[in-house]
View 1: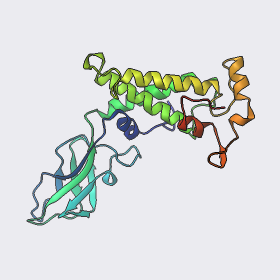
View 2 (view 1 turned 60 degrees about the vertical axis):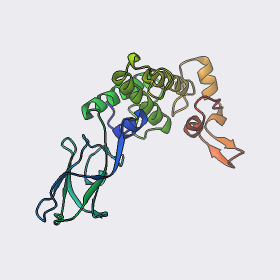
View 3 (view 1 turned 45 degrees about the vertical axis):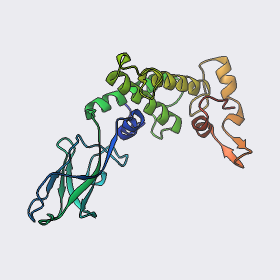
View 4 (view 1 turned 135 degrees about the horizontal axis):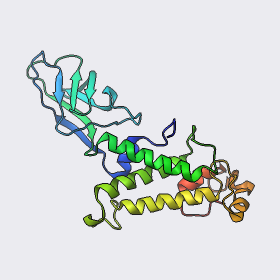
Length: 232
């Protein structure tokens, strides 16, 4: 398993359409000058700032529409603990994100996606990646999201050809990774085929002057802009 994850759980959930935002919800809990604990309607709460943790920075608690400091968050129960207790008559609301997917489930599909990438890229790049190429982040995100969707929705939900078609997303990620291997990954030293080596040894592949943008671009930038096009 990589020491540095290639993609955050939040990014996977957003790619799969399983990260749900809630804004200005009237949370449950008494505003009486003593109580500091308030509970959201939906749970579990999830990360909102891409650091793979659920903490006070991932929610916004308001008292009468004004943001207030949060002491702690319990993702499973959906409880938000304020530092100062609102007084009687105050309206307490919150912004947060939640998902119907268990956190362990998301971790498992991320591990599977990263293990698959490492297996495929083992003969191409030094692994595991410590500085993750943007292309690898994109492939890991789409592949993991595809696994979530295929397991959650399956073939019986009439998802073929829609944004919920998990198998289609996985196949797209597989095609991107195959192409990334052909051009030599982040090192540009592919050994998968004579054609792959020939293409990846083209110096323009790594130092390409973009007339339209008036600057040089690299593999990952061009791959991300046009994953179906000719990178050379």
